[in-house]
Image (cartoon, rainbow, N blue to C red):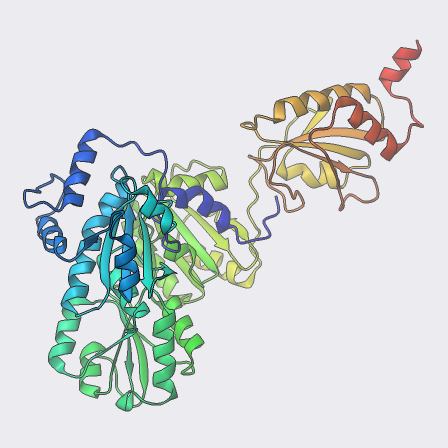
Amino acid sequence: MHLSKPLLLLLLSLLLSQTLAKSIPSLADEDLDWSEEDDEEFDSLIAIDDSEESAGASTSEPQLLRKAQKIVTDLNNDNSRRVVEENELVLLLGYAPWDKKSAALMPRFAQAATELREMGSPVVMAKVDAERYPKVASLYGIKGFPTFLLFVNGTSLRYSGGITGDEIVIWVRKKTGVPVVRLSSEDSAKQFLKKCKNYAIGLFDNYEGPESEAFAKAASTNNETQFVATDNFEIAKLLYPQISSKKNFVGLVKTENDKFEKFEGKFEEGEILDFVEKNKFPLVSVLTEENSGWIYSSPIKIQVYIFAEEEDFEDDKPFVEEVARKFKTKVMFVYVDSTEEELAKPFFTLFGTEPDDTLVTAFDNRNGSKHLMEKKLTKANLEEFCMALEQGIHPRYLKSEPIPKEKGLIEKVVSKNFEAAVLESPENVFLEVYAPNCVECDSTTKVVEKAAKHFEGNSNLKFARIDASSNEHPNLETSNYPALLFYPVGDKSNPIKVSKKSSFQDVINFINEKIGQGEETDAEKKDEL
């Protein structure tokens, strides 16, 4: 099955419906199993009541929520237009009382509101219960929950930031005129370090020159990473201890191994952005619901995923990090806890496997292919696997059922024998593409079976069938089931699509037109007798 676009699009369709998608303003979830107890806890979060002591909340959450009560404006049918239109900057959170993700986001929103107020930000923080005030939700296009919208002079801006309190603050400040935090004293630098552990740092003389401008432009474009600048070498050394030169400098600081990354490229916006995007992750990222969107959208085109139970991976992690260091910025390494079903199962489905042991897979978004490391996970085998991926010589993985031993009136085709059974077959091939859970496939299958019996004995024609949910092939280009394809002799690379709504007689007429009626079928011979 040919995947012309990056293969992760399919994975995202399976997985991101279960996660908080970071690149869209609506973070909706469907088919929620929500109890009355959960409702009560959520109501207490929304109310931000002094008596709130919900069982699942940390000790700091009630304090944050109570404090935010005086900061966050509740919109309703009467005040929504006035709040949005009369304030230059408004960050609006649309939520629903029954939504789990709204409940999880509320304390983070309260944290962001409190911090922005303490920073002196002019942004008005507001929220609206979209279920209680559907007219307000409709007015601002709030359809899924939770939804963030930033209004600048009444015009909404698509939210593309993260979902933690810090990430909300970073995004809002970047979009409201403070893309770079300037630090001019050691005290301010120390206070900054208490709060921020991951950041891009720039050292520029008097904050002037094209290098400083490029850094500021990159900061405005980037949505997740805090950018900080100083014109003082000693302050820069506090922020980036490994700095050795007083010349203009850009670096990246992280909390993981390989904490400090020095920028070696040209001081241009694009190169600075590329440097930050490719180096912001740790050597081995741990996939979570919160970071999945950032990982999938990484500019690093080759991504290796290691599935194992946490205890087992701890033994392998040291040598995995060694390999990751060799392929830094070229191959991204991601660990997935195989016991986390919502995270791991979509991958297993994509590869058609239920592993009992450690599994290593890869995606190459340069060509949309997926790969499987069939050898045991060792340092040498992992290096070999990554080298082959980087060079583009590792064979792509195609999901396939075993080759069937017997051939029936309608031949079962799988990925492993697709070329021999279809593309290299000396006969014309009429292929039915189906999926077991396809409702429409049953009626099409009956038509094909009847047509196969009609043409039984015709040596110039073969009927075949393939389960597309269990088999993939780059020359099988279809994503809608059922599908009917006719592969004519002499031009197998250009199959003819036949309408899935074709009747038995339509199929008979089509095949007679394509192969002629010069050879009698067994059915026709019986009719003559």
